[in-house]
Length: 302
Image (tube, rainbow, N blue to C red; front, side, top):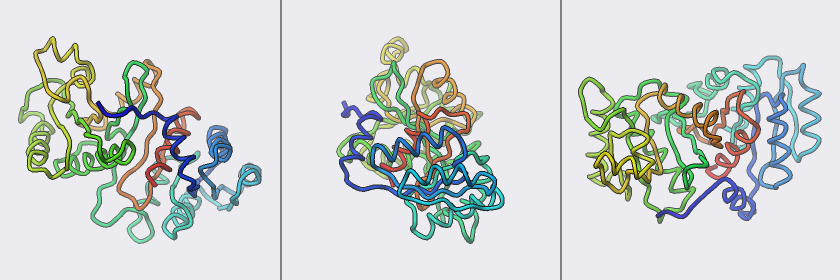
């Protein structure tokens, strides 16, 4: 079984690395973002440059006064996003973080063809890491925030991002177990994603994704609960022990995300992949703890 990793261990690893990441924050104008910045500073793994709306300059300057960084003001939310993106693009920051901006405002700046952060030819996607009390290890899943209905090549990109994050967080000697999520175990042309899953399994068998285990389609319970898999008569090295869940669409993944945080007491962290640097786009409704964990993951992968 892969060595257990949790957010506390992630924080300790960052602290012991001796390298402080630089984070550009667009619109750091809410209490949760302020708390994250304060905690990162106290724990010693990040410095910040803050891009705030002019009417919120006093708040940003108060935050900046407590950290080795500075605050820059702009006239509009769109300008704060563009300036924060520019700081990352020009190497002044290793991570981009969203504060009180609407996600679409930041994404427009990230995806700008001339001045954005998307690597040419790459697919922008989102991965989430979660610590669920009832599950014995960190679980990654995708895509809960960006791609509505992935096609085969988008699934391929999502899988590669999730595998890369898993290996970099856990060590390249670990073998990730990937479950391809659906409501049943059957491949059916009526559900196009199950045909994409079959292609992912074929590519995995060819060795395109390196050392890993992949199975599906299967439901979440089968992927994460060995007793459920046993009752169904399903046995593989993935069932009951998944490290990564690939969901069929954004509705399924986002519903899973919201459900585990509300009803299962899960702690989550999320970030965008495919850009030149990690992008933290936690929901404005997410807790300070979720935003802090997102920062931990992004700084770990920066």
